[in-house]
Image 1 (cartoon, rainbow, N blue to C red):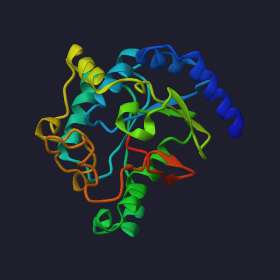
Image 2: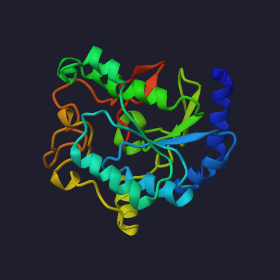
Image 3: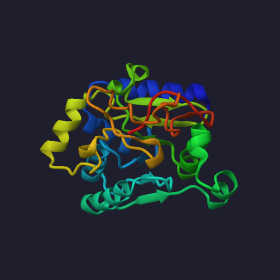
Length: 244
């Protein structure tokens, strides 16, 4: 689809749903032909259960894409299995990097030390691009409060260079809204949260966060990096914060 047509479509969607709640944006987007065929991309991380629960309540057959980088915490893998069963997700797609790509690019699993951006591209970005082939857009858990670059994040946005849109139902939520939703719906928390991990990614690149630190301080600590690699422009990693 031409970029200007996609931009006009996103502008119209934002105008249409500007005053809707998160759950309403999600439910209506899944049925709106202007949004197209959507998939939820989930890390099954610290806050992921909110959108997963919303999808399970709204349309449990929605495709849910989970990128197993093969470097995740064991706790994340167990949590993913437990949530998928508890929420009765009907179309969970577990995607991993291509074995040949890993063998050629990271045979000793140390690429994250030498070049974390390249590791994210290998283990997250390229697998996600393959998984999203055929979809018109994807649903993310991004929120305005997560980073200054997201201060004006809208419900719908253009993913430059791919011809897809991104849907951000929780864009306007505060951290307190996430906690309230989880408590009111009695949703299980990722086990690592109680151990000091408010933001959870791959095991080698995630550390606990001390009191007073930014919740994202444990991601790629001591590296000039804040992007997990799944938010991209023209197929390249961009540094705009991290998906939930």
